[in-house]
Image 1 (cartoon, one colour):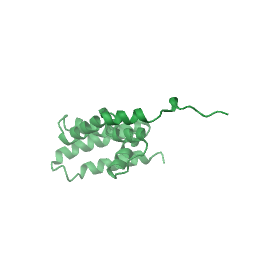
Image 2 (spheres, helix red, strand yellow):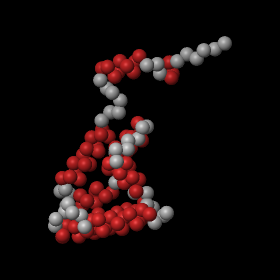
Image 3 (cartoon, rainbow, N blue to C red):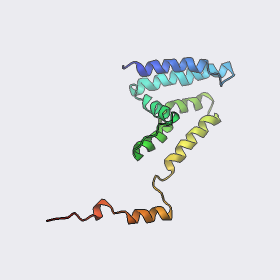
Image 4 (cartoon, rainbow, N blue to C red):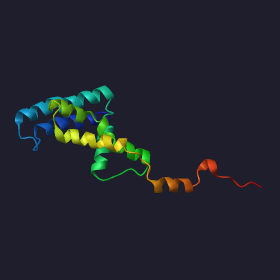
Length: 139
């Protein structure tokens, strides 16, 4: 069980070498070295815990959204915690627009307020009793 994240990283090196979206073989080799082996290094440095953002991103890709607002917020921000994206930017010399757009989108979802900040949203929150404002019945 402990070796599972490292096996996934080793498979990632093979995926980078056979990536059909990257036509340049030199860039494939660079990606395999920087991204693939960097992921192995990240797994070693974190004790394999770098798989958590991967799982959260996979759940998002499969359209499995967490029902709890805090967990959903963490799930949407998972790309920001995934070292793979930063390693990919490093591999491309910082100029890989799909990765930059993906990280930008994740950052924007984190900066957006969770609650409805419209006038109607604020009005509805005012009408809803809060726990501190409830009076409990006594005998």
